[in-house]
Length: 117
Length: 112
Image 1 (cartoon, rainbow over the protein chains, first blue to last red):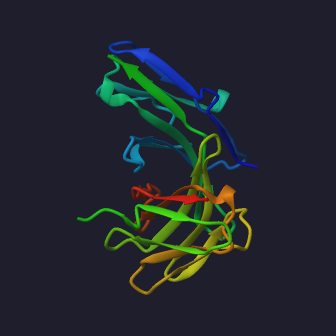
Image 2: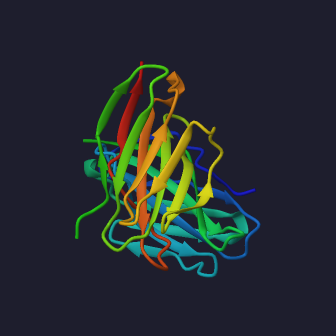
């Protein structure tokens, strides 16, 4: 069975601190995709990054970076020098092919990040 | 390009009633999926439609149903509402060959 675990329910940091959001996944598929989405108070989930299972390169985008390690089935997300605008709920997700050849998403329960001024 | 539009934004219903939520995907997107979000449960997959056909279904009771029209707009219906159905219902669309989902702002349903 596929599963995504975000053990951190809520994290509070002070502005300019670095923070890492953890994501651990389970899947038997050899081909799959991992995602991070951000949900601000407006409710709309916003796509941040996608990684496929064959690409373990870490990625950096501005203050955001992602560490994908297949050996530990983890796909962690780090925000450097956090800002108040980073306050949101962050979801990690896993998608893989179903038997009908379509994608199916499994989301984690989310981590609420509060960045205090 | 307009984003995913969900209506209404808020709904208040009482137990036993039924409700219909609407979702208009991004132009050109033929896949529409629905999720239920509740505190502590995260996003639970309800179903996905593609070209008016249900392709995938989550583990929800038959009170939850959906459909998709020829213009890719989708509706979901919940009959015989229960208190536990109170949640944010999110719709997402995706384009051809695209694994990334584009979400609407959701419909906040409160069942009293």
